[in-house]
Image (cartoon, rainbow, N blue to C red; front, side, top):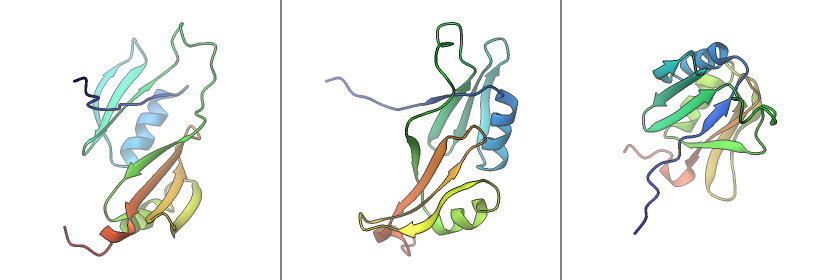
Length: 127
């Protein structure tokens, strides 16, 4: 049976250095690999992997942007909110929602929406 084993988004950026800096400084990602000839980089935080790239000659007809958001499942969402609310532009403040998630969202330096959520049932558990 075919299995999907990971999703590793590639975020397009016009300024790869600035974007690497945002993800490392603000969110605590680590730079795994970088190729300046390709204008490409790979980042990691815990089990989350993502890549950054300037659009190449095959992708030049598209603009930088994304018609959605990137949703990160985290633990200790309230602590993360306290850490990030002054480091990045806030999309919406932390809130508990009827679908059972406590979450908030910020914008990265490119305007991508990054949402962070934790199931309300997990909050207060010491796992």
